[in-house]
Amino acid sequence: METKSSNPDFLFQSVTLIGIGLIGSSIARAIKKTEYIVENLVLTDVDKLVRAKAKKLGFADSVEDNLCAAVVGADCVILCTPIGNYAEIIESISGHLKPGCIVSDVGSVKRAPITDMSPYIPENVHFVPGHPIAGTEKSGPESGFAELFDGRYWLLTPPVGTNRKAVKKMRCLFEAIGAMVEEMDPDYHDKVLALTSHLPHLIAYTIVGTADDLEDQTQADVIRFSASGFRDFTRLAGSNPIMWRDIFLNNREAVLEMLQRFSEDLTALQRAIRWGEADTLEELFTRTRKIRLGVIDAKQEVPPSANKSR
Amino acid sequence: METKSSNPDFLFQSVTLIGIGLIGSSIARAIKKTEYIVENLVLTDVDKLVRAKAKKLGFADSVEDNLCAAVVGADCVILCTPIGNYAEIIESISGHLKPGCIVSDVGSVKRAPITDMSPYIPENVHFVPGHPIAGTEKSGPESGFAELFDGRYWLLTPPVGTNRKAVKKMRCLFEAIGAMVEEMDPDYHDKVLALTSHLPHLIAYTIVGTADDLEDQTQADVIRFSASGFRDFTRLAGSNPIMWRDIFLNNREAVLEMLQRFSEDLTALQRAIRWGEADTLEELFTRTRKIRLGVIDAKQEVPPSANKSR
Image (cartoon, rainbow over all chains, first blue to last red; front, side, top):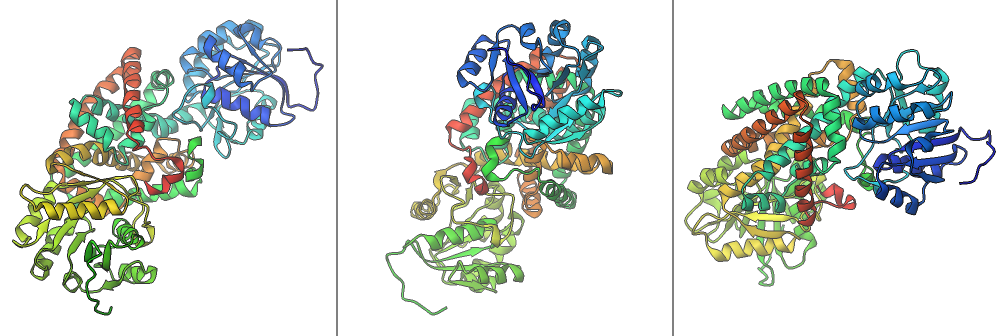
């Protein structure tokens, strides 16, 4: 990569993405598609094979082998790795961050990363944690695509006292690549996502695991005749295992609380089935339709043609 | 409708569908699209408005107001109503069925309908229960479409001793409208479907109900920021309440057994999260990917362009 003189027309002169999986590679592709946003885009990944793939796919100005070298001179560094790696990464790079640099991330949990990373964020560096509510069950740099964030929410959870100009710049960046940006309290974020994303994935992993424990013939027929329901669950349960392990370990309290509520409700429904309480079942099944209509109204339902982006 | 002389080129001279919802109207559309399958297609529904819609949509030779009149002279009668209505319907029509008539259904549970209906099936009438593994969360005659069964399984569960020619004719009919037909033991069917369809719907209804009980602001944000997972669950939980009430009441034993297994597995996972057992989580999350690949191999995963048919 040749050294360029900085061009003030760009929002950021240099952005570094750490981690080139589905999200990192989608951000990279979206940034390179957008003019005057980032002049110099640098990627790095701990995995040599992933770096080689990213070089070959060619959606950045450079792919760096060395983590610390990758962040030198960056105006913005975004962590796109599983949450469990954050503390180690920020400890390694903190001495190499340039004054005024903005550090962000894309993790599905927000309180634990803030607690873990904040001690390592230098005084003159800004920390603007984020979470794009977008993804697919696929992993790796080849799975990303530039349109992943189109019309999806990108939640920012800056700690109290965060520099407002830094928050605004991150908002501009994410809006430029198609997202709708909202600010939110990190604990509230973790509670909402525990119900909308973490608990559903936990349940999906559980039920697919239950199927995996069936005797061979039944399991084969469960797969063969998998109907609407189980088929959707297998999609969720095909997501990145390391990423999801870290989500559950880092949002333990909120997930356990939502799981407790869910289990109580499930037990009540189990009892209604056992005792043949037709009215209880019908009442719940009718009530839940209202929420479905809300999701459709909120335009968070994905049209069939855009299915690959979810 | 004028009286026609029967044409031996057709598989059936006259078929009557009872119930014109998503499935009934899809069968009707698929039959009318297929030449030399059914010469005369009659529909009926208990709901006057539904009958009026069906008449307007015009995908049958006639729509009958009277249930018993609708089955007179039919070579084949297919029940496409919620399972809870079967006993009453068969009791009403049994005296009007012509000798040699084949009675079938499309219910998602198979043992209970066989037990409930068999006493009312006349000696000279054949009973070939069936279940198309196809559907969407939508209801009503306007939601159906002719391609709903393309490449989907249609499971037949004829009681022991059922006339083989009758089974073969039903196989021909369902294959002609695009389905892949398989025969299966009714109890085994109910066990497999309890896991692949009934339990996932029960869980989806539960978690969406859990969300409905949250205080207003959180519930609004759960809907607004609904991520992959919850959004899929709302789709399942938007399905026909009466149909699903009847499924749970009629497949009680198998659903409760699968629910028990699931609950044990969920409790184990809950414990792993509480105690931070990273390896337990990662092991399960890795294992479940295998089942996902199996579903994709079995071609039961629906491509994005065909999403409306699921």
